[in-house]
Length: 184
Image (cartoon, rainbow, N blue to C red; front, side, top):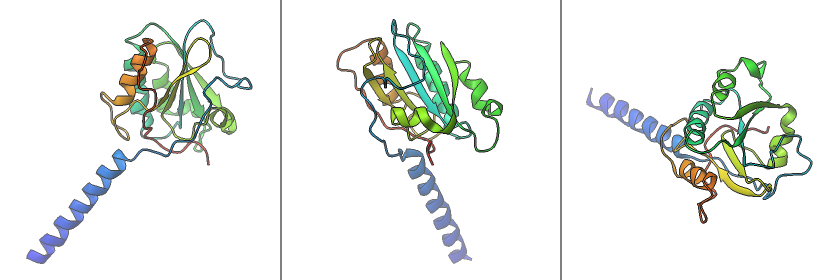
């Protein structure tokens, strides 16, 4: 009986370690442009900053990303925001719960990205990648805004995005991204 309890405890411990490691494992980042790509069909508003958030509609981490983005953007003057949804492998992207959730982000427009064309232009490979471009089209922030996969709460990325939106010089501009892959 004692051996069975030991095996059971070892299995639980291994599962907890695996879950903890997974939640803290950031996705590999691909290099992206440092200026707004001229060939992009996404609308940039040259009179103010533009925030892009690339998401997979069924990624379980996306809800946390959208909620954190909503929190950050509610604390600063309005920026143009585009929540860019990749194709939904299960069905119509507008039926995903995250489609409606994204409508709550201040200043957000939801955009479909058939075939991941825009994701490739901006070097977005992971759901939850947030990019901030200033009014002149220069990249000011690239990264994630959550502290882990599917976790909400203050994070280095959210604080860096907030600082960059407020125009603070020397604001950390890159942070880890937690989420599902965008490009197959």
